[in-house]
Length: 267
Image (cartoon, rainbow, N blue to C red; front, side, top):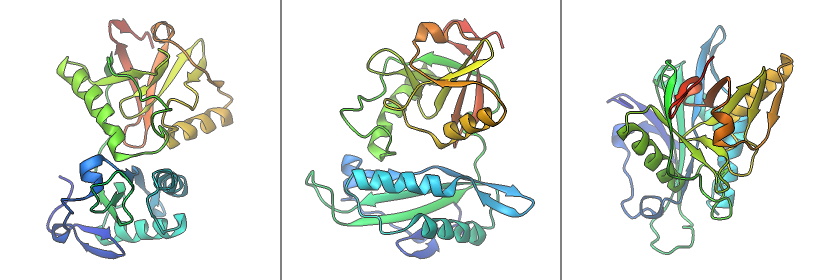
């Protein structure tokens, strides 16, 4: 699904076949989840493939590496250039792009001084599909921001997303909604949340959420169109009185909700 015999990846300074790459079984990322990644999309336009918000995504990747003390000696411009060449080598214009920085063999709990950078790409439709979603409130909370850097896309953090997604899917729902430690709405298992009430949009503020790049883009577009958007905390009970709700994320893009638990959104 993600690669074939001809797929090319960027791996530690070289473009190689995906089938020829190997992973370190003693990697700190594999044992402890100490790695960082990004999810980026490219779209086919009249001017060819264009990477969506490349600089912003790679800036966030570098932020994640910095807070986790992982070496990443590439600029945003260099990473963007590599990405465009990778798309061309794979003949892709509409594509999902996954940069991943992993740490080397080190069984201590001090960040390894060795790092590997891999950038992969593949064709991938909207992660959550095109239909309205049936969503379950998760029994799992979004991680406490005092326990980790919640705005960094650290590989190990996503065990939280896996647990909440498994719970939702196993109970017949499409997706999970997580609350923060204060009981306010935080985000979906892998996307940000917007609530619409009386013609106004609300979205949780930064602090307990992943500050999504698609989220920021939606907010910018709304401001350009004169649509009111407010960042504020709101409860599950408030969300269940909303007129509409949607999720935003690079993989999901923008997708609406049909229901939340037993509440049916009217719009």
